[in-house]
Length: 110
Image (cartoon, rainbow, N blue to C red):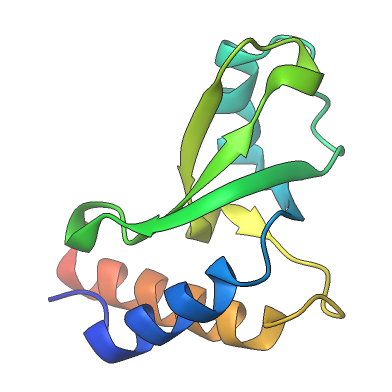
């Protein structure tokens, strides 16, 4: 198991109560987002509409609204591919989750 189920469940519940919110995409996520929304600027904030747990396959994923960036739909991105303003609600908890998940993935060679 990659994620600590209790940590993921708590974070998911707390993060759901703070929606909608904004985050910035990592360079890897920007490339994927641009495939779906060509007008997306890499430095613009992503609007997060929903968060869900996809299990070990993707961990916590965020549903992004791409309509304002030239896209006509939404896209789900792993929370590990988003960056948060350190002053945003729960940013420290999200960062801790991200670090734990990335560390576990590296250990497992995924």
